[in-house]
Image (cartoon, rainbow, N blue to C red; front, side, top):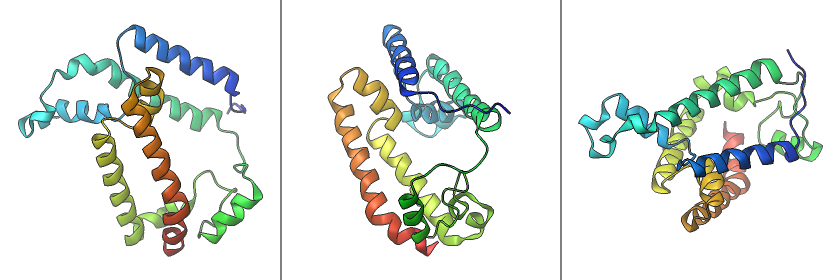
Length: 187
């Protein structure tokens, strides 16, 4: 395993900008959620809904991007992840522990949300199902996901993307400060 530190902002920022410039020059839009439509179309969902009837082959470059994202995530997890606990502010650790996340700062992902016990807890399963439905509905209603709007939409100065990103942030802050403190102790 390579023991690498995260790349600094002055490297990753220009790389993201270069990718966005390349996509704009080639007339492409960045986004992940649109691939779900493409995959459903490939699987034959066009027989059930007009929404899925389109030329998915024109979007095949985006499927390669998603595969690369998954592959890059696997490489980062299995080859580049620094062993040891996640470095969190001690105040954050205490706040998370008060919300039933006992392994805050000592595990990469909290076991109450991502461990085997989450799959045997009916409330945790209901929360995951409801959360997934809300994220899917929100991405469809906003005509894109957070990555598509925040990176691609804002870089091309699209007003609807600015509105969507502001909505994403308001939603995230609302859930973080008002919903999770009530929900996590119940898990």
